[in-house]
Image 1 (cartoon, rainbow, N blue to C red):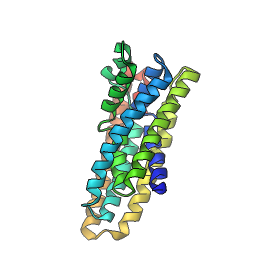
Image 2 (cartoon, rainbow, N blue to C red):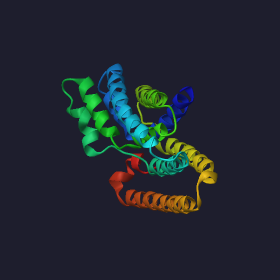
Image 3 (cartoon, one colour):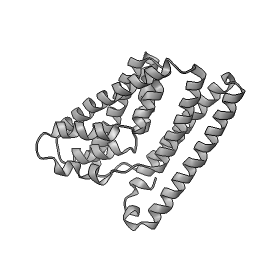
Length: 235
């Protein structure tokens, strides 16, 4: 369980760096008491990740171990490109804090719950549960995300500015590529011929698609002056 806790903490903490949840945390913390914002983040994260762990546990009992490892490696590559591309708040998410007039705790909890559904940290938690102890993954992933968002709150409060999005995203991207390569290297000897061909093809498609999406997002941002002024989406 300790191994699961440490691995999931590290993976989710890295995944959360530069994510829109950090931007939301700074937005709320700029207007409301930091401990209420952090409490809301903690509750929503615990709920989302227990659901993720349930999904991952169900998948883990029905898929061969070596195939799970290969899928996990490919997922890490997807997370790498996702992080490299960058993240930004939607119009609704960026104005949520401005619309809050009453229960701050409920507003923060619901906003983060909706923001995390289908996000890469949720997908990372599902993937990790297929390989590690479910309780350790749940605890580690929850603490990892809360720690990352707490860092965002602290940095925003002290410096009054955003995290260096590009530098953080590049570092996180490198780590995710490392995780992905390690898992694929571990799974490769155990795969049969067909599985190797399929895995190799999926990796190639993932890399090609990732490069295309990142390149397209970069060109779109450069062509849009309003986006260019918001480097959150230019990583």
